[in-house]
Image (tube, rainbow, N blue to C red; front, top):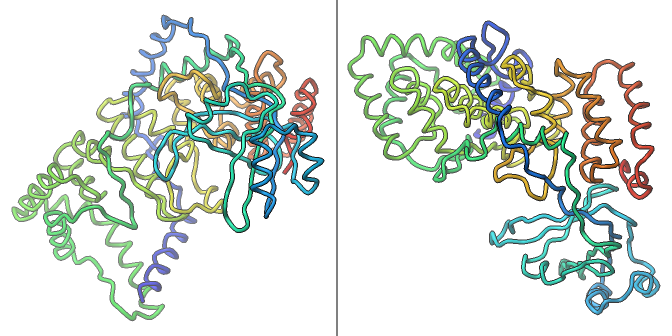
Length: 488
């Protein structure tokens, strides 16, 4: 019966999503009201003036990158092959000795610091950018540093699963970095000017919550919600309902929800018991934290928007599945409350997370992505230099400022396709792709961004023109990048 109830809720959610936009829109057609937009515009004006006098002297450099061959050996030979790699066997000799090895030649490899997902220890990751499939090798940071120059060396990782497997990169050259040209560096600096690098959406002690789990029991809040449900005659779920009864229940529940705030407004004015229970629930939330959006809604409406924002920043909402949009609603509420309480450093990060769909989910099917809008228009009406902001979040750097915001290439492509600045964005992307002064990795990212952007355009003739322009932009690419970049 529990499974049937969950299925009913999912069915209602799917129907609801098909009938409405993702978030409720204000009278201006945006997800933020005119009053909120006015407050934000004032902040943006100040930040744009600040950027004009910012120190723009910092030289950014690309992420370390090199060329390498990828090699995979599975089975009983794996351990012996690993020993030969450690012994420094040359690439050609190795292939002659292991003719059944799987090889992918001349891959663009990047190196970056990461954290082991099991024990949280520091590691160095090596992964490919171009080519078919995704190859990644991680080593303890000290072990990676001990390798020194990688040219003519193996970086290998053994997996004992089954009969054993060894994956390795054989490096053709050393890792290198290039300075980011000044015109692009200004975009990066504009991002850091607008997206405060000292700010964070969530507090240091934030806990993980979600629709599928709660982290604490809140008896005072439970008492408040029970009182409201009883007084307002909230429809109750019953066991063993027929399909027809489930349909009747969901319609009644939707009707109740549509009237809930008006009824609670009335209780606020007339019910001493409601006000007492609300006060107790608020004190409980102050002491214990909170994991209930409805209580935070009442706190914002009847008590303190600042406290509601604080409570939301104290919890990170994890999506239970592809259909669970609670992380996005949580971010929207944080963005909205941050704007209302004039906390720009929180607002912009939260809105960019919505645009980039930068949330944790237990699972996430691609079929659910289309319903998640980008809301780039909300930034354009604020007089933000959106081309600089968006393109500045694309670059991957070796010396980025801490907490520099990074955009998602796939989501950015969709955002740019909905932008009022599409023509300018196209010019910028094609310029990056064809610019020989820019490092190969960031040129490749611009290529993938342009592909994503073009895919999301609705104008088929524009897509065709852009495909021709993209082909022209890659004509000066190095051969190894050209032959590997678009294998799918």
